Image 1: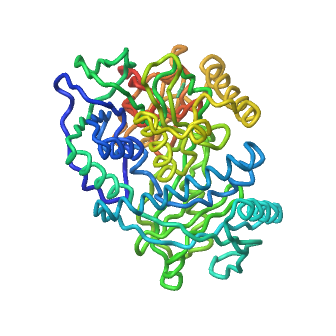
Image 2: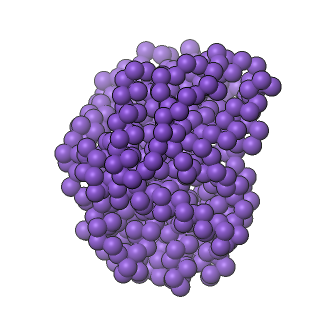
Image 3: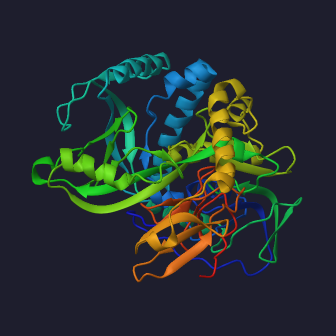
Length: 493
Ligand code: FES
């Protein structure tokens, strides 16, 4: 994955022998590494199996903020789960921020951790009402906030709420520090080793080798085991498009010490990274609205309000979203012994990966806090807190499956220009077609290898994306994002 972060992480071999450890962690992103760090610190021997390179997945696309004011979350959590749960999540998040700071200090991890002021703002009257409610919710939970006047934004706003205690960091430098720690404690890491099977008792077969472990942690961003667990009914993926830009001379100090997040639908956020600014555009469910360029939406916004800016870099990031606003951490399923999962970070991956790793590691080390465990348990009863989202997710799944049968795209291969792609039907078969800069066609099967939904062309990223649970494939069928664990079949031209 393309990344703006500094990647010093060393390379590791592919699994080439049988191995044995206390805990096997599947997935070498920030969530897996927090688990590995915690368990190594307590004397466990850990092994990590990563399908690609450590940190090459979602972590490298992180926009890396540590903060507890996560848009309009506490008012929503209080309504959905009650004040106690909202307070617990707030306390856990504040604790995560402090602990991450402590770890970077105690382990000498230089990851450009910098304090930032944090402002939530709105340009709409209904947004002002929401901000007032969030302020009340935060104060009910013991956090002081204040409304502020914002003059520095290049457009008019209705209301802005300032909240203290946020930080920005470089996620790959953090990951590098955690990786070094784990290796120094005897941990083993294997890259280019994709796990596709499920643990059977205390053993899992990977590429013909046996891995024996007392515990297994699935930290693969989106859990790859469908049955049991049924995570495909509990999670969807959302994609954020980001442009890194250098502001013009007049705006060079914009966002220098403050991070701005707009709470309105289809709005923009600004975070500083050195001399440049990250502008996050509106997020969308992965695989939807295929005909609108999300990067162009951001460019239009920057042209209007940051005239004379220079585009430095662009990338997209993918997040797993739970139906009830809280991440999942705990036993994968009652039907799988000693298998744990952490997922559903709802766009707050740096803090939520820390919280959920702690929950799982405490469980493995028999130090569990029952109350905390129940809040994040993947099998928690959240039916009423999430019924609308669950129905929505099911609706997308049904539409995704039926599109294979009903959606006849009239676009013909001959009309696809160079550097363009589309999903079309050839002899009744749905295929994804991309014509490269020399006119050569790349054709893959247009059905997702996860659970069979119809893929869609994403012209921003030149990929074929699945709207159901967010798997993504490149033009040759290679997996860019799970839960798919099988490449999309290449069709001979
Ligand atoms: Fe589940 Fe495509 S990601 S069907």
